[in-house]
Every structure is written in C-alpha cells, then in structure tokens.
Length: 315
Image 1: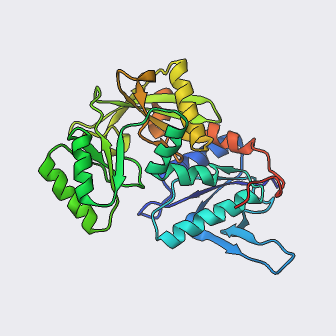
Image 2: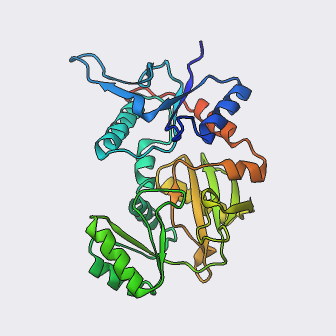
Image 3: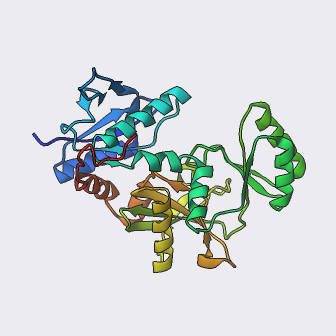
C-alpha cells in the first residue's frame, strides 16, 4: 500500500479538524492520495539502545521511517514551552531521518518568531518596517517617540492579527508598555505604516508565486486580516514583487510561505515586509483566485524525494 502523507495540526475547540485540514483531505481524495491528519499532541519519541536508531511516532505512524511519504506541518497550537521545544526537536529528528517535511523545522522556528524573521529579511537586504524590541517600558516609551508616536505593538509569536495593538497616544503607550512589562512580556514595537488601508498576501510555494490577494480590514478594525472579518480580492503582482516575495520566503528557509506586503512609497520596491508566515492559510486565496491550493501543496510534498539519513540535515 502506498505510504500516506501526514499533516501535523491541531483540532478546533469543538474537537473537529479545522477547515484547512478538511480541505487537504478533500484535495487528497481528488488526487487519489492517502492522507492522514495527526494531532501534535500525539507525537512520541524514543531513544533506542546503542546500535539501534530511535524513532518519532504519532498515532501509530513512524515519521522517521519509510511508512510515511511526507509530513506537512500546519499551524502549531499553543502549549507550554517544554512541549513546543519537544515538538520542534521531534520535527528535526524527522527531517534528519530523511522524511520529506514541509516546511523544514528551521523555517518554522524562524517564521514563528517575528524578530528573527526581520533579522533574516534584513540580512537578505529586504525592506522591513522600522522596529524596536526590548523589555523595559521606559525604553519602549523612548522608542515610541523615535518611531513617530504611532506604533503597532505585537506579540513575538502569533498570527492572524491576534494580539496586535495600535497605539497613537503617549499616555496610552505608557500604560500599555507598563502593563506588558508587569507581566514579564516582551515589548515589540513597529512603526505604524500609514498606507492606503490594505495590504497584500503573496502565497509562495517552491520558489513560485501561486497567487496573491489584497486584503481590506473590516469596517470596525484596522487590521487587514480576513480571519478578523476583513475581505479580500485578487491582486496581480508584477515580476519585481514576485521576486521580492520569493526572496523573503528563501530568507527564512521556507518552501511554503505567505508573505505579507505593506505598500510604502519612496523606497525601493515600494513595499515593506512586516511578516512571513510558514504555515499560511489559503481559504481566501483559493476562493478569490479559484485555485485548489491544497492540491498544489500535497503534490509538492508528494514530489519531494526522501533523503538518505546521512544526507539529511542534522538536528
């Protein structure tokens, strides 16, 4: 029997698989591929006696062996630091065993960390918003002034617009920063980019742009996220913008990414890149462009060759 493609994901609060896992299952059936979703919480690992290799398993599947054709990593649900570290260690072990994995663990670790993402983008010579990161509210307030007196405060980890706060008043900034410091939180401040009221999400897969959408915020919001009630429409990106998105994807070490672009005049390219998502959603993209994005992803994973363990990256 043909080995299955696995998707590591989390269930919704109701215990169901989320829309993206269900869409992958639909696409797999259309492509006549075996597909099995597995919860992150089901990951298990063993260290064997000397001379025998250890294993990583999930729901009875050995991810480090040939009985699995590939592993797709969807958004990792929140958990304790210990569990998150173990999950990433397990993914590195799977990669080292030669099992095709999308995205690679290094890309996941980079993209989930907003600061590290910007470091990688900066090193690649790509445009990023002016950003300050620190731990004390006093220094953050000084940075607030230097950043023009209007910033977006973001959690270091997180996606879909969750936890973002737009602050444009100094007293509000002082109280906000003090509250974050009091809970031992990290202060991540980004200059607010006053654009035309929309942003662009470019979906990249294996150094090719699958498509792009322009996202508009809901009437009651400033965040241009479809997950927070925003809307989307197809967006044509020119060759230069395609190259920009592909370079951003490569900078974080990803094969699959959603690259966010904010329009900003007066700079090369005309865009800044605030974030790169290594587990991007595609519901709005697929609907706007009438593309079977899930099928593209599964086909890319299926066509990824298995490496010999000694060829694979070490943990």
